[in-house]
Length: 432
Length: 204
Image 1 (tube, each protein chain N blue to C red):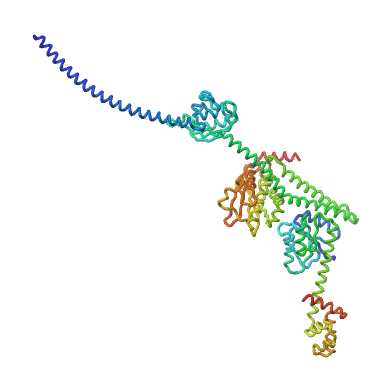
Image 2 (image 1 turned 120 degrees about the vertical axis):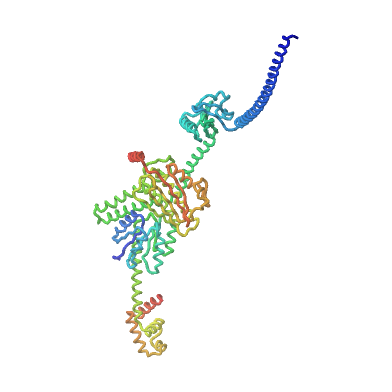
């Protein structure tokens, strides 16, 4: 080996040194890399676990939603159906998801309820949770009633991006309700008829009074004419009385006809005090036979109320009869019923029927208006329930109270007659 | 009978007015009241006539008014009740409680007027008898103890002699007392005296 080989060796050594250094470096690097890789791998495993758990959760949620017997759906703000579960598909009569997903929900909302539906959508996207009922016409044209509970779904920034709706078919419930309402109307009519029976004696008396007066006036005239000592002008007054009493009798008859006729409430401006007085007359016989006295405390100058007089009479009559029966059954020594009228704080009128009977058990006071609730031995529990229906159909409210010292008080309110009511009354006037 | 009044108590103004018109046709005085309360407030037991009442009245009923009058334990006006058709039970109760009469609606006008006349006549007779009795009681009160003793024995049918013996008086003294009794009681004969004594006896 000469100088050249020396140089080569040196070079080699030098190179070897570099190589060694490089080798060492790369070994260290490799080691670091491995560590990093390991760390990365660890992280990836963690990530995977999170992903798996998320996936699992989603599967579980999906399983729940898929098997949920009620319709669950996601909708966009414009009503586009984003997702819907099988129960939902069935509800809208869709054969496959494509029939409805991606389409607007309005395809299955009855046109008359589209606006209501839109309004509720707006409220949900404004952040509210809502419950609404609407009529639906399914993809196969079936009509049904739906009830939807809808809540907003928010993204990470809190913005509402979808509506989550749970909807169920309430058709049966709705029909039952409708049927119950019709049934109630029919019962009210039946109750009116049976009330008629009770009132028949009272009405007979009501008719007999003017008839008796007519006979007396007429006979008084005949006797004087036979006696020949009467000036014709003296007979005018009594004969006018005869006419007035005949009109009074026909008024009673009109009343009976109105009472038995089945009809929708005919709301018009009415004088509540006159209605009360009329009921007091009609129930007079019954109350007196049970030793009860009815006192009237009628506020003067009340506004006219928007009411069907016959129906309001029925309410007051029911309440009076109810009091009489309660006092009779409890053998109350003092039997007094006070009917008061007065302003109700707002623009309307309040009617109060208070008795001196045993009052109402505090535990039962919330039930007295329920159908078929009765404390009476022979009651069917319809009177107060019908009364409430009537008051509510007039846009009023009714409530019961019991005094600490006994005595039940029923109060109901009626709205004051507005402009349109005055018009209705004018029309009524033209009919006559 | 000229001072008799027919009192009508009826809550139905038209009915009350019509009854007044009918009853005035036989020239009777009529006074109407809308309630038993109104009638009782102005009630003067001294006024003659009769009372025409509707059994059915709010407040104090006809029957109650009758009971209230009876509760005064003094003579009161005869009552004619007017009852509704089919109120026989009520009418029976009224008569049992001392009503003079009742008419059922619808009534015959002549029938009602006849009953009213009868009631007024009965009222007059009752009041006359009552005033006679009153008078007699006053006269009797004027007798001395001895005169009452003599009266008692005369009525029993004893002769003057027997009375004298019984009381240990002379026949002349008995005769004197007897004449005083006749004079004080205004009796014209023995028969008269016995009648008066019986009336007084019925009182006691």
